[in-house]
Image (cartoon, rainbow, N blue to C red; front, side):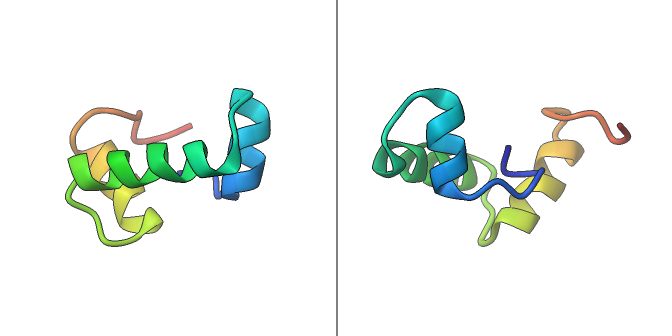
Length: 55
């Protein structure tokens, strides 16, 4: 959802969690990917094989 540009609120609703929990999940993923931005997290996720490189 980060790679698709979802907001924290939209991710929370889709996951059935609070926006605060969605922010924590996003922050944890960004830390694990060593990314400083959501865009960078998407790039790293593709590079690390977490996401396919094309749709």
